[in-house]
Image (cartoon, rainbow, N blue to C red; front, side, top):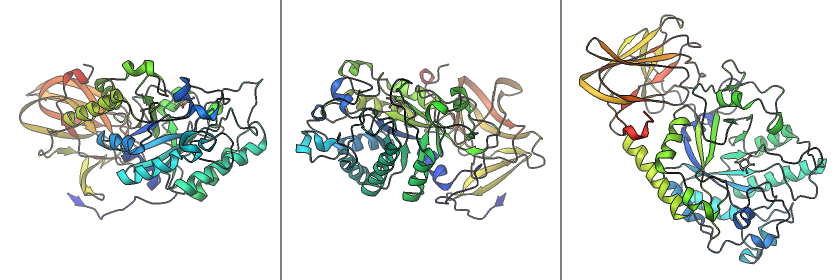
Length: 463
Ligand code: FUL
């Protein structure tokens, strides 16, 4: 066994385009965090406000951002991203660059500031704080002119300077104004440069990055094949983005490192609507989404919209807690924990900040097959295998297979393509004496961390 030197990588600044930055790697470890859609739509029962709503409609009676954070933390979510400005243009902070903000509302006599309250609560509860700001603005008088780009830049400056650190910034690509409406030519490069100058460690999301990409749907489902690479040349966020199936899967030989984030709402809509209180997704449905997002190497951004009181509803909170319990129960008791592997064309090494065991595959030749075999002391029931790839040097695994045997008899086989940050493979329960995981056709010499195996409640695996 080779004991490699400790190689700290977190916090590394910009990397070459095809490799992750330290911020992107740290982002990937966040795995699951909450989205909060909150604003005039919460009070008008709309999803897309027109921008002409009187400011006074925004009037949460009992806003408590600490309640949001307490629930997020107890739910095991690592951060919160808030809609600071949705398409209706209403700013949840008293921006100097708009006359359509909390300041113009009766809420707290115009002295309220949701971004201030939430950023402080996130700090208190140890959560990362992220901001969604819609470039599309149906209210701003300058929208549709070059000056609006100045407005947007100035708003971002206010946010970063007054409420930072901002961990993730979310640029929504939606733009409903058609050819007959106002059209804005966005200066995306300037927007990006502004953020880089203000806060180099912030990760920026849009359909095409530059740091995090949209997974191509709003159902929370990443591609079963999911590359962290994407070709972005010639594309822009929004209408100029690549086809959604490309966003869903990435590009195997893509030039840029832009991992996928899966955004999905716990309710049918993004904003809170009373008539959706009975339609909150169940813990089991959320677990299924977890398998299809985090379990496919992406991150899960789960929207939990506060209600008109300014609180997370009991229905949503109960479902989040149930979801957490299912994750805890499912991933306790790793069946491979105390078993050492038999290796063929693989070198084991211990490295990284926590000295996790890694297996370097394709030791002899990247084209040769590599095998990792675990033999149980006695046959075990199993229906879930978790694989993780070390990504500092890129994503390399392209094809693999698991083979479960009981004695000489093969009881189950399953092929897979990518792993990335995490791959959770679920299958019908099998009794197995050994598990072999094989790899071939990798792009270089990948390293995977020690695999894990579980027996998960069958009702959760869809088998
Ligand atoms: C979309 C928006 O149009 C929705 O209202 C929501 O904010 C969703 C997350 O992104 O593009």
